[in-house]
Length: 514
Ligand code: HXC
Image (cartoon, rainbow, N blue to C red; front, side, top):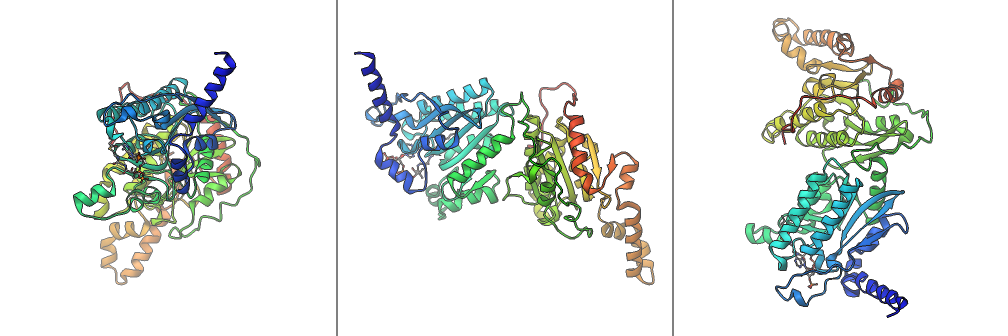
């Protein structure tokens, strides 16, 4: 056969396979507001940059009539491409082919692209849309998942791993996204659960919809499994592009510097923070007043909102921000906010991103619920993560820094490189009211006018301890600065610390309070 006929044949073969599960299945997919696997990849990557591999892969299963079934591409599309010019490895499960279920060949395709990503040190994006382990392939399907989980763990902290949940992600399949760095979900489309509504009904007799069990909102607001929530697939892809532009392609490199449009922004952060320590405000307004061009990419925006984490640039360099949020629960630390911050700190540390901590909190949330939910164990994760991190760490105490919260939020004692405090900062074991009530209790009770004495003692305590100068006199705070100097101090601190080199005792690895 002449070559041109063979080329024609190749084109025809490609066309057939690229139709996935066929027109009807594609129509069903589109009716649910979902793109097809290839459409998703093309929407995410730079135009004309996608190169597909293993298009003609075929499964080898024989049981349950599988030998008579042709599954195009075995239900997953894999390949490489670029995003804003940077290389990416990607896979997208194709629900139109056997429900995107994962058999041995399907898993081999995914692990092939995972191996490429790790070897070539480029980010991996996985689009999940699948009914889980292909039931007909039995233990081979389970083996496939195990191989994926192993590689997720191997790649963790080496290359960024991003999971996009654009359909069901059922059964053990959920553990691959859970092992990756960032999980993106889309309203009404993403569904993640270990045991589905039918099993729950059979075993527990409880009725629940898939959406209420493990929809996008559930994982963004309640479980914390998702890091980015979007209304549509298109919005989700924009979020992924923004994230990729902020993070380095591997732990060998730095995130890309992009010079700010306005190098000297004039945003008044001084008046964002009320003088009264009990008055709430939105910490994100302070962050936006500090970062380049007020651009802040918040992570896990809808979960554990008493802490705000995310990425922003300082003088062009992407940094991670960890900030108490006085707008929610006065910005206290609790079980979930500690988990949220600790994991993010470890991400920044693994990928060479400076950590900027903005402090304004009354301490840890008291109560039986928190104690029994393990606030000791979870709170310890933050101490561990900050202490272990060796990237530049810069801390600014804006207002309150009481008790264990002061230590946990990137204090000098956990080896922050630079600690700054605004003049209104109150650094103490606890708030003045609580402190005065305890240490002057006898005097207050013995007084003729206990209320007046109490007020007097609160004022006395405030005067002595509720300020940044005691900490500054001990060197725990390096400089007391005007709010308007914050950005300049951070820029300078990052410049000075960017090549910092520290090492700890030799060990295989530590044992964090997981
Ligand atoms: C084989 C599957 C499949 C699976 C779906 N399909 N899931 N085939 N193995 N796990 C097939 C269906 O038979 C159907 O084939 C096609 O995909 C589309 O599925 P539908 O059910 O028609 O789609 P829909 O109504 O949208 O429902 C989607 C769904 C449902 C909710 C995901 O298919 C479902 O509940 N699937 C099983 C989910 C589950 O329990 N998975 C866990 C498996 S155990 P036809 O030929 O009719 O088009 C597991 C453990 C892994 O994953 C452990 C790893 C550690």
